[in-house]
Image (cartoon, rainbow, N blue to C red; front, top):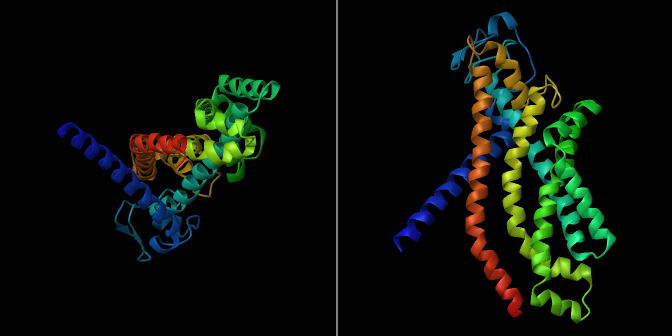
Length: 294
């Protein structure tokens, strides 16, 4: 039908655009030493190299694609190395939160009695706490570092995944194939590994794609406030903070990381939406095949 074709085309466009932006960002982060001018923290002659406009060449013959900041550091170099930290922190934080969420949600769905009640109570209590306030509190308790940011983001982001996994697991456990497996004497561990986890991949993948963008945004916010990655190590958040006082004279200092941050977060959102629409029918087909014993 024409309507189905146009919907599929829009879905594919979102997936291609989101994947393309993320792939470019990852390649820039991985190849940062090859595509930039070198050390992102090094300072040369500050007087001769500070606040150069994008596309300028300094007195030493070095070309600066995105200009320099107030300390004479190349903005493009710092943007490329900052992508390593921002993308790495966001990915590791989501991996940690997803691992905790799957463990808590699946255990609460399979377990009986007080174990399930305690896990759900802890999850609901953590969900009731404002995440931003909790982030600021935890980040302020320890000395800011990359490791602390990953742990803080991971330990405050697992609750929604746990609730999602719990709801999906309870729905799957109530289906005939799970009841038949229990009746045949299958262990709860086998049911989780053999029947639940394969059917949970779709919502978890979608939640992860959306969560990476959210984690990158939160990391940038913490770094902007001085509670995340500390200068002189580059992060998109502390780069924006460093350029906020020069928005009128040198907007490229904060503008470059700001644009990169927006593009990556939007790309994660579009990719998550596209994956949700694309994997939904596949998930229903997988569930049907599982019920039929294929």
